[in-house]
Length: 289
Image (cartoon, rainbow, N blue to C red; front, side, top):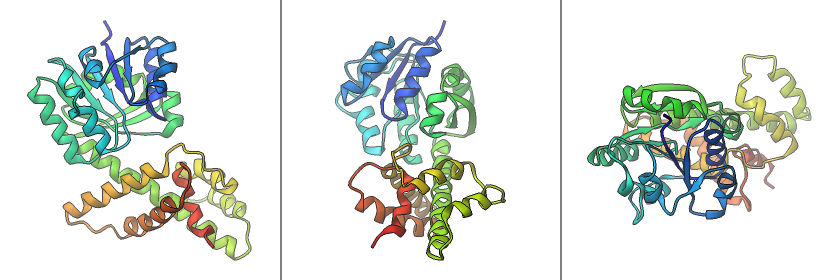
């Protein structure tokens, strides 16, 4: 018998994850701070929970996918937080991107209630969420991952067990630093060739046949050339993740000069943005008057 699943957080990633869980036949209870974001999933067969606590009380596996550490803290420890409703023997899987320290704190809180915890942030973007092809980076007990793998398999294609709680978040922050740097480097290069009078399309043509090619650039380059920055991975979230990576580096005494420099460019564009944009909009740093 399939476990009952609860899903908290129905944004750009959570909503398609919920759709895939329903397609796979899981009984699903959902909750989002903005209630109408759950309407489509309810129409597809999900139940609407009254609160995070209510969702947890109805689920064997609880998934959280929220925007930042304060949101996760409120979801878990708030007045109607999910921790208060967790069943003994249930598993809480957090796929948000937060600090390793917060993941470890959540793991301790779950253990005190007789539940298991996995930090399981994802990579793959909205297209991966829609196709059910996310990659999960997992921290926690391997046997706990094995228990929930059928649930994760409805949403993803690979599950990497990386170590104890916090390891998943550590690798996710490192991964996002790489993605941010790759896109920022492409934007720098486009600014350079453009200033020299060479169309950006020419650079991309050569890039696609070179060692510098990267999957993320395949996706982002056409958007940058068209100046189309509808948010797939919002800049505000990448900026948050880069800040978390820099905080983690400081804790461990590691200097990240390239990430620090790129963070400045992302910060400038984020502060100037008047709408929610994709992180590829860092290209606007070189478009400023």
